[in-house]
Structure formats: C-alpha cells, structure tokens
Length: 174
Image (cartoon, rainbow, N blue to C red; front, top):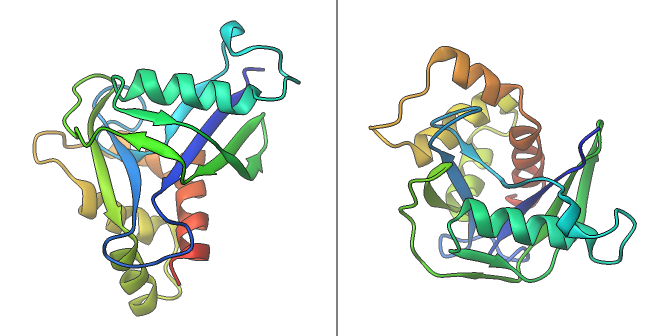
C-alpha cells in the first residue's frame, strides 16, 4: 500500500483574519482537475526509511517542492490527522513561499484562501456540510479556464484532501 502524506499550509494557525491564509493548489491535470487541493503525495525510496525521524517531512518537502515547481519549500510539519489506507495529513506554518502563483504543471495555480473569509462563511452557515463547503471553496479559488466536469467535481467531493481541508477549516476558522 503506498504511503501518502499531505500538508495544510497555514500562514498563522493561531490567527483568523483576512491577512491569514491557507495555501492550496488548483489542479491543472489529473484527479479532481480544476479543484483546490492540498500539496503532497506518495512516498518515494529517496525519502528515507518509513520509520525514519524525518520521513513525513521528507515526503511532504519533496512532493510540495516538485508540485509547486520549486515555489514552496516546507521546513517543518506537525501531524494533524490520519485517514485509512496510510494517508496522513500534517500542518505547517514554517514554509518558504516565493510568491509566484501561476504554475502550469500538475497544479495551474497556488491559491491563497483567506481564513477571514472562511470564518465568515462558517459563521453564516454553521451547519455547512462538506459538499456545501466544497462549492464555496471552489468558488473562492476558481479559474475560468479550468472548468471541472461533473465527474471531476465528484472525485473532489470524495477526496481525502477535501475531507482534511473541511475538518481543519471548520475547527480552526471559528
């Protein structure tokens, strides 16, 4: 079973304002094309031993660096949540972002999502379901040139990445 590690990049986990943000990648190709996703992915032999001290950091650092075309370097991670099938989610406030948002590889864009806007959303819709949140998050990050098909949006709704973003935002953007 492949080991997968993903990261929620939060500029300031203790704050919730319009100048505090979460970085997401807008998928350009492949799974859930056109939808905002987390960075990270499958472990590789070069990430070191699975039980190694920095294994999760190594996977996330390498995957994020590759996926963002060397525009985000993750320095440190903290375990957030574990899902079945060896999928783990981490958070990081310690990352270097060049500020370049137009990518064009696996991800078309890096999107900054305002935690203040997310807080306003959850305040106005405290019982928002994951599907409602997905629509709102998609509206916040959409690109008119990348319109997901119904099937691609369905992939997004069923993704562990969306589940982690939803639970993290619901918990932290109060």
